[in-house]
View 1 (cartoon, rainbow, N blue to C red):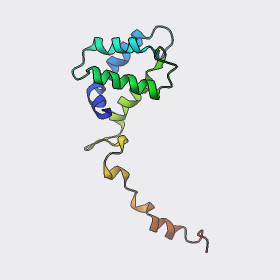
View 2 (cartoon, rainbow, N blue to C red):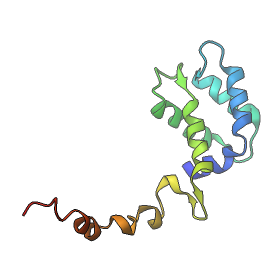
View 3 (cartoon, rainbow, N blue to C red):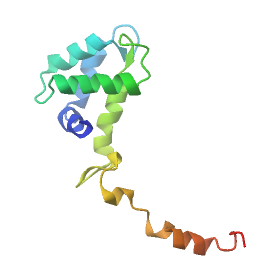
Length: 124
């Protein structure tokens, strides 16, 4: 779902930011769940269905250090959407760590090479 959100919402990141700022009356960066829902629905983005909106609410609520559904820090949504641009490869976002290539250790730090480089530091 994270990849889908990045794909669907990532193209409209700036528009979403502006819309949420308009809904953000009291404290900058903090919004209620109803304001968030209203803002996302008002944009009428293709692919942004009820399931997507619930996912966005969940991400913001759990990762944003919310003080309840009336005070959610929506900046974490943009952190998620920014990952698409920072770490994308031909296999998709590398930051999600799904490909085996992203989990391979560089050859220079293989266990054998580390032991060889630090053999004088190893206990006898």
